[in-house]
Length: 347
Ligand code: ATP
Ligand code: MG
Image (cartoon, rainbow, N blue to C red; front, top):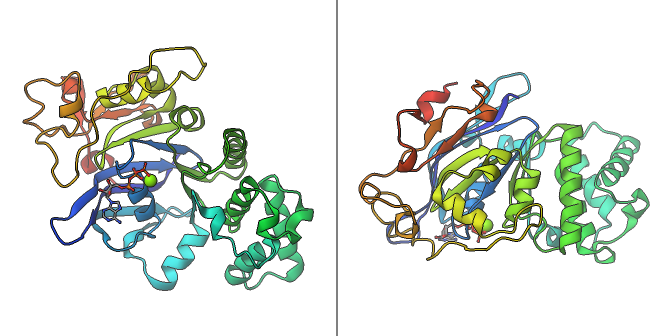
């Protein structure tokens, strides 16, 4: 499919007085229409910082210090989201891209019926829509997320956490966005509810063709529901691959460690080894590869060379970008790997 959002060399820093902390460091990712891009990585690797920056919802001391966020409109024209401000930015956030956060369900107004809250969003952004059409749309949205439309008169406190989170997803879908960013959208819920809601999002995505950037700590859920996986370590993307290739054969030693820390998808038992050591202090990164001090496969060049993100030839010989994978590790810095980066993607 074609690319709806291209994150190009994005860098986000927290400026808190001393040296700035680079929480997102030169990240380049492409999101295609209708796909789920899952982002994995330990706590503190920069996933939420990335999610907020993409939606331009980041707050000081976070600051975007470099890069572009190229959004492709349905007509093929492109906008760098970093150039938007004021009304254009607000409109963009509703019409084109929306975000669902972990604690979103607590953002509902406790004093207003849920149907009214969805209707408010429609009134604000679709002023030409009549009351009848709006009320039909509210019912449709509730049905989409699996809530009986009869319940539109309910107040938030009358609904379970899972139901409230579904309402937030309905609100995110109100104006038919092309991109939905979900940062731990179901983490506050029990496992069964999480799975139901996430599966519902995937089936909605297939019907409505929006793309999803999906962040969760649950790696097995991430692999199951994503088309592609990007792994972050210390603010950088260290591996990117189709989910099934990633699961079958993770390339980066960090990815291998992450996968070894989780039970297999089939539920088969395996020894959970995890990854020794802790993520680095972003204010004092080791030289060369940031993962090197924890890496079981580190060798003499690792402290010396910062590994570039290498584009590996797709194993199927296909030109399709969906089949390609990238890895930032000197173990793969061989003859068949090419340098990746802005030069290879082009507008
Ligand atoms: P988690 O899995 O725990 O949600 P994450 O991958 O979402 O983690 P971020 O919240 O993006 O990680 O944080 C990345 C890094 O940015 C942190 O390790 C921290 O160093 C820095 N950071 C985050 N928020 C702030 C802040 N408000 N002020 C200063 N530094 C921050
Ligand atoms: Mg986070």
